[in-house]
Image (cartoon, rainbow, N blue to C red; front, side, top):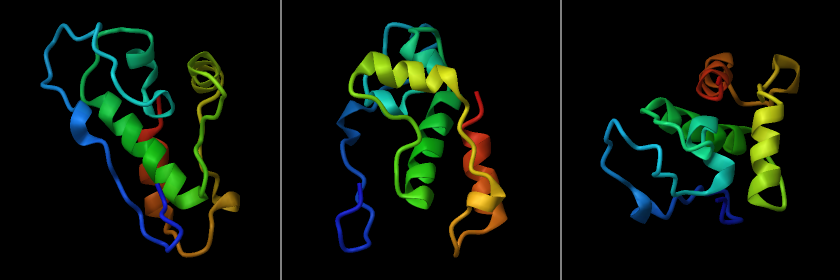
Length: 109
């Protein structure tokens, strides 16, 4: 995501889908950014997008992804095992409490 020059580059919007109420079979995307309901092939709404936004925000603030694994199943287990939050004591300089609160709320399951 970071290009080594301090810029954030977002790519891969080619997997965008139109929302439908019966969407449990639609789970394209990168596993580390998928909400639990998407990974478990349950119907989902825009809250799944907020979860992905929270993962991106966490990565921007903390400099690493919140959920790691070498395989899809390891990443899924990491997401299910622990709800990640940024604690005030771990907050890097230059970020506001409001930014941290926003990311933490997006990552809530």
